Length: 265
Image (tube, rainbow, N blue to C red):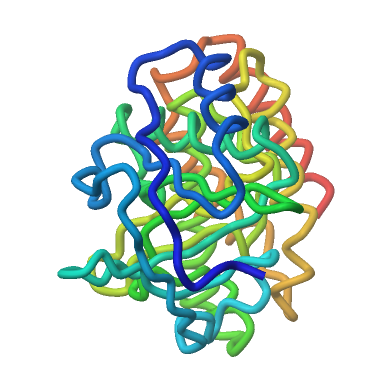
């Protein structure tokens, strides 16, 4: 059970080796907040009390993607900040996702949720990030339609999302329709559900992402699109976006796997 009142413990040190960041997270007392640097919470003081208020409406339409996530707002006294609190089993997992969001933010190819800090309790370590109600996952489209144009849009969002992640050197690790998202007002694709993501130094993670995304399409699309449709709205846009950003060997490997996947449809 998360406390309604949270005390600020400290601010995460900036530009430190990963082991020092992990130590800082592990040393944070249960129920106290370790604030990430350069965030809307950066101006809070050590020892300051904040209030967390659950807001169930924030979870509407997100039941398939929450993974134990709690939604609400953190009040600093003068400001209410909408947040999502996501549990991790240990500091290593929480820090891994944090480092990936930092990489994606600095690379600028695709925007993740902004991390605000870490809140340990007796059973897990919660990462706190900004909640954005205008960002929705693509399964909110496929769950309610077999409209070809909407399916094509979802495939294009999937292609764009994976291409932008891969250009940043990140493999998603759980690439599927429910883990791709977009901003309803701007149309921008967003990086979400990065718990299984990792820095991919080879081409293996990229290939696994493409393979897993394709293999899980029947879980979300009742009437599978044709191979030509998937080529036009998923593979071709993906290959166009990563051209020049990956090594020739990586591009060749991706080209071969995409051809193999299309042949299997």
